[in-house]
Image (cartoon, rainbow, N blue to C red; front, top):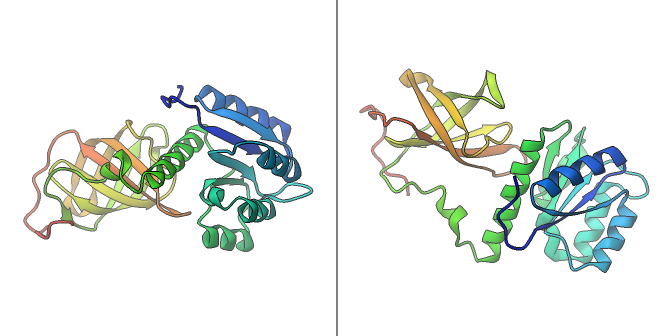
Length: 245
């Protein structure tokens, strides 16, 4: 499905494996992005120097000549404005790599990954970049705010989603809850917005069909998502009555 952006977002794919470069180029182009590719960090650096810039750079960690992390260090030094635009793809995250990701707030996705997860992560990163460019005011900021009374409340829950968590449920914790929906936090793949799910909040013995309204990564491990119940629930009296800010 093509993106609805009037101006196509530009993505640079950097990977030493030609098959992966070709596959990512095809998938991202089909999704509506303008894609360029490089086989190593030296070639990618030349592209950075000779183009107007990229909205996102998807790159492998382990590459010849210049590995992904050293390429990122040099790119940030020469072009500080692109610091938040790196999405690393890697089959193994070493302690050094993880420390670098944390230090520089870099996003990464582990290989092998599903293309839908990659597209969701890219979409979330680009939306966050646009929101930051507007000074933090935009539709994404409002997505987390349900126009209803909601309550701080933490409880374990299970989420079943057809494409990812069909047979083995996602284990999550609720962050807040209302009659019509819930916000959850978890470690795992990003739930696809717009898809249907079933949620089971164990200590309430509550099971409801729901729709995933939004999802976003908040750091390299944790994800939050908002789910809307298909039918409103009756909030138990035991749930705290302190309204979320």
